[in-house]
Length: 161
Image (tube, rainbow, N blue to C red; front, top):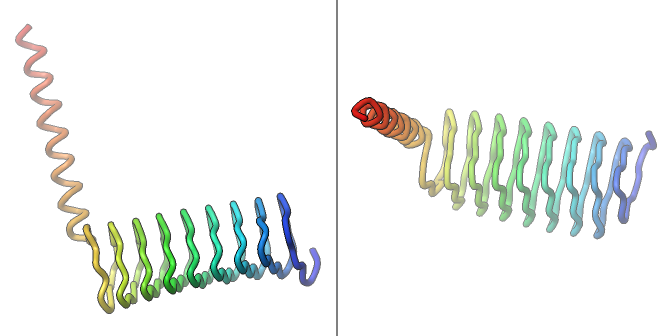
């Protein structure tokens, strides 16, 4: 493992510190990853910084995204600034002007952000959401009861024949 590695395009990279400016990385594993106007398939690191970039999957202790997008991420501390994520799980999440499809977190701090489903122990600030933790529980119970009734009706109809 090298101390610091600037990268343009690569399929797989492993180093202590990686800087990607433009270009793309298939899979990267490092202590620190900084992506500026680039893309990555899979990132695993202690700390990830993304500016105007995209990634499919990010797994890191600390993640800071500015004007970036990710499909799935997992981290202990997540900071999203004018960014978007489809699925995020974090112990601490800070969102500012960002959007999340599904966000699961212990504590969520939000300012002018939106999510479809928000599952959090504590929420601070304003987040516009379609389904919060309580709503998700109710929706799950309703779906389970509906499926149970349909299965029961199907069983009763089969017995009549």
